[in-house]
Length: 270
Ligand code: BT5
Image 1 (cartoon, rainbow, N blue to C red):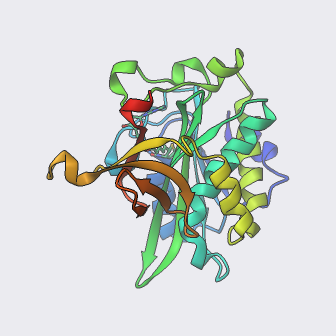
Image 2 (cartoon, rainbow, N blue to C red):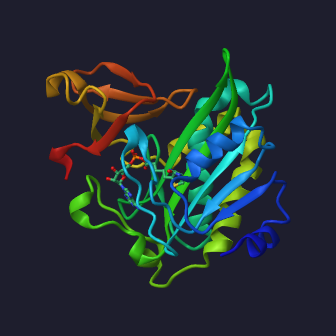
């Protein structure tokens, strides 16, 4: 992977500028700084290795050299897009699902920001914003995909099992082609971000739908009793803004908003 081959490979897509790094701390950090400095809409930061890759709550995201895809897309939201920004994470997840389907792999979305193959995490998404006074100036959509086996972190470092596309396919796919396909799928879906169809497709791909799950508010995890920050219930689907609908074990309908949430199948369903 290098700047020239990437530019050529992505030249048919309506992107802004492209910046490639052989190694970088985090593509999201670079994209946030670039967005603040005026990056054109739909610019992309791509790297072959991250040394400070981030998940939510500054959790670590592993991107060993030459094994993964790690990139961040900068959007400068138009007026049409602004009301639907909470759906960008779903749009990104569906773009990864579309791309995996082209490889013959059926993936699912673990709400809010993970993509699973065979109930193992193959990709993670981190959406962050640059604010200008009261409104969002730009949105950075960071995506990390495990391509080769060596991208998968050691088991003992993970809270949820992980997998690579190579593990699932039995061979390593072409990284640049996958990158092209994820970006192409994202840009193709973007005009439909406000549609009911998007929510329907996102719901159809949700992992554990109709099953009992446990939802934990990670921010509260350390400060409150476990019973106060955990909801157990049946995963029903999504609200219009992409938040999660559950039927709690007490029969109440509950909406779980985006945040630092982690979702697991409930212990008694495993
Ligand atoms: C995420 O966070 O899953 C979002 C990951 C976003 C990564 C991209 S790469 C490009 C861009 N630049 C960045 O710096 N980040 C974005 P979260 O749901 O908080 O999950 C983080 C957890 O996933 C960690 O605590 C680990 O347990 C696990 N993990 C770390 N690396 C992994 C990997 N390569 N594959 C599977 N799981 C991983």
